[in-house]
Length: 374
Image 1 (cartoon, rainbow, N blue to C red):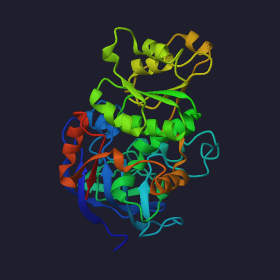
Image 2 (tube, rainbow, N blue to C red):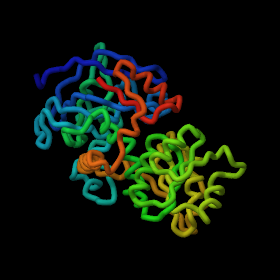
Image 3 (cartoon, rainbow, N blue to C red):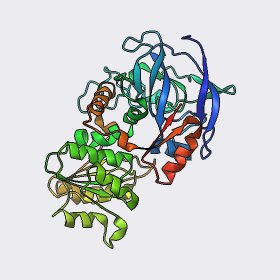
Image 4 (spheres, rainbow, N blue to C red):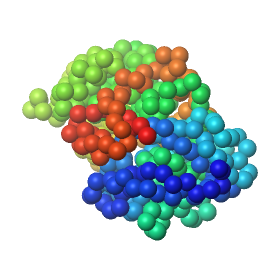
């Protein structure tokens, strides 16, 4: 019945640095402008692991992590007009309210409507919908997909094609959309251009895919893990190099390889030294470098101002620049019509009880994306 508390399974992060604990949790019904969703599948992203590690200063515990999920609306709160029970949806960690000055500006996708409460792990009214063993459990990134049922703001939901396989399109909730959009929206890669992608994990592969869709003529993958090269080439990389194979800085290698530097570079790791290398690998006069990876809090980037004075541009992107509510359904359609790859990112499938194994695979560098099903 709607408007009753649901008892279900969730993976609770009780404290930093400890494995997730599979628990029975109580999920309260949705309040006004909220939606309760039955999660069918969710994937594990580096951001979840970063928060769980305790390195994230904004990470609070106990919490239910997860932000790459897909499911079915179970019930909606008062005032929800665009969604109803039975809708197939992807929860969104960047909402789209459609009315804040960010949503009204075509230059950004960073809706600020619920940013403050979301950052604190709370619903927009300042409370939580999760309890476990009598304790309040926090929400994460406004989504908390590591739970069989979750409650999210109605502006944080994309309604998608009901025929889409949820154990695949859940990946469009973060990684694939982020990398693909970094290339096509943020960099606006042009046909015939040369691109370098630093970091060949899920996001890096999605950038490669975006560069290829945009018509780039030369795509160079950069990673110290050569096990990732074969897959990068399947996604469209022409060649792959490891910084460890050279005695000189990798940006100098790339400048030599490309007659002056690449037209576009992408940092998909979150390492500030690599961000510098990515900028300096760009061509004088017009090179654009996009920061996609999220660095640890407190980190700072550096380069000589001369790099920018001589015509290079440093940009950043969040969720690939997609205005989420309107764009994610279109990305699902592009996948359904085979314009973009999704299945190829899934390297492992696990049951929900094995969710900690997904983190182990991630840390071992063995997986691109592991999908966990309830």
